[in-house]
Length: 162
Image 1: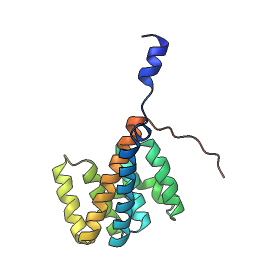
Image 2: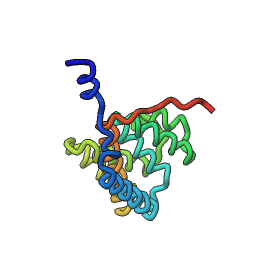
Image 3: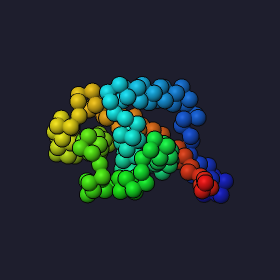
Image 4: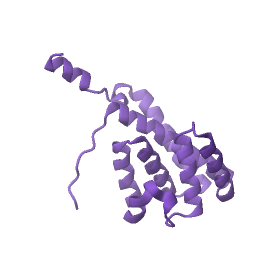
């Protein structure tokens, strides 16, 4: 393949830009989900933990970058962010956060039925029905954004340290 033809096949379509109506509908969904989460009592930190954990599982660098910044602005600690991928092995997360994270993981990897059942059972002990619903909606929404960014190969650019 010639260099020019190779360059065209390597270049990804930014589907958010190519199909803005669909992307704007996803943004509106995210706005509605944030409102549902707030109304259900899931604070911004819990929402960002879900966003980050799902993005870790999916390997979405762009969303990890965006939501790490959002979590830090919401007051999250660098220690908890640093161990989030191993949250089960720490005592740093509350029972409610642990339940929400388990739900987020099982929403992201629904084929693991045993993990899904265990996550749901734990959620029933720590979260209200509204919180369970909100946590699942947050996970569903970030999963969709992860796919947009991964398939588009949205770049992560270095930002100078402040």
